[in-house]
Image (cartoon, helix red, strand yellow):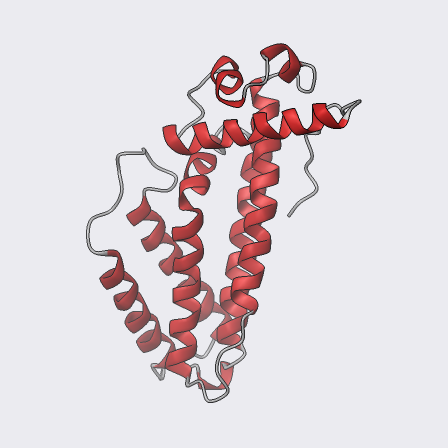
Length: 214
């Protein structure tokens, strides 16, 4: 993740650190529930049991609090994404099975973290720090996806394997993100059955990558 910190003022006591962590957890839960940052610090205070005065003792604004929430959440997602793509395939894995592993890994990461990623993607339109972290998260996911497939580049039929894999990644990510409504209004997910969409993406990417170009 990029080193774009928006640090809180350091606590003087351990109790203050624990209270601030509770405020961060409360802000994240409200963000997920609302699908946006349309809540107040008073609501964060009520949910966390931490006074607004204590919150303002650590940050200057709700925006700063949300940047800290974002940094903590994206670090956790980055660690889980790295671990997910680092899991090796079986020894006798075929190329179609490798494609399926890459697509399904991306789908599992997005499905698991979509409720958190979505609100942050909407906030990224007006917050450059959150936007930069979001781009870094996508780049990491794309790198993991590419690593699985380019390890089998000799079985890719496209004359430019890197381009073909990059295009495949963008298509898979875009289709899944649209279905989940990421980056759009909360009420605007795509239509269709998730399992069938993932199955179809596996089939399409496999056919595209294995097709021999003249």
